[in-house]
Image (cartoon, rainbow, N blue to C red; front, side, top):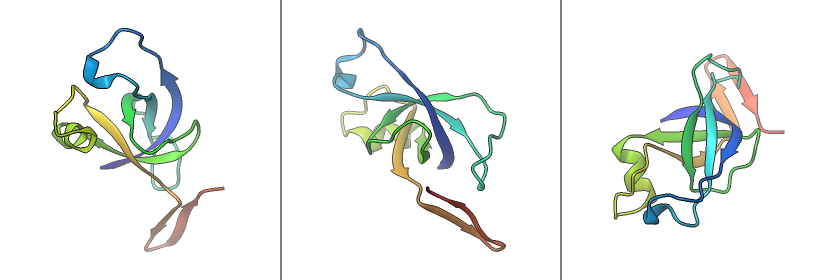
Length: 97
């Protein structure tokens, strides 16, 4: 699982039928303080109603497919949570506005 920021959305009118009525978002990995890590954005299946700019929890690989459905849709990344606060040994590093 990793932390990412929603940076956009993807619209696809033609896709696998198991992805019908799904929301696909661009998620860019960030550090525990919400700052970009310089990694490329990934397309992620939104399971929680995340919005642009929110910090989210992303799972990848077979875990993402299982999170979406028992039918194992062709999903490589899924947004499974919206982050409210990140706290490390040094204190709170991120708090949702």
